Length: 167
Image (cartoon, rainbow, N blue to C red):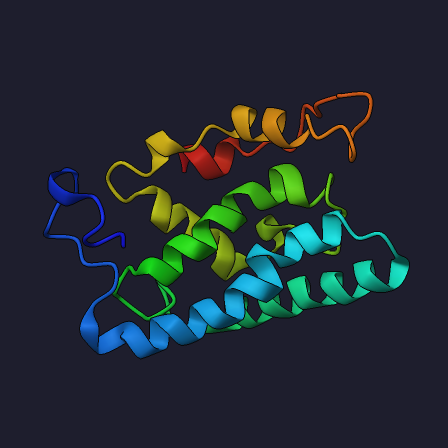
């Protein structure tokens, strides 16, 4: 969809789903979505200790796995190619320390504690046009407005993500 679903609005020179990598992209997406992308929500909205712990373990098992992968195969999930799988990872990682770590109780480690994941975020933020799509204050305000998780509506001042965003 990202390659073809936007017609003339899409720039044709960027292929986020190249044919030779599609099986690998799909395999990564199949792993990343349930354990991380949706896993943070399953953790944050868990209604039992058992459900929370199961989702929590899945989130950090996937972060650990992705850290190891990026440390050996980076800069992106499939090496030099920036793909749809990287976007799937980026959108969760960029919100992780600001929202999921505190509000969703995904607090074993921060993305900042993972060298390869942190480098990945910085690398993605250097791609033309990406940094302009990230507004940490807006992200925090949106997530911390979820009254079921934050009934008093207090938005934390931290964490300081300026080094990541300006680096």
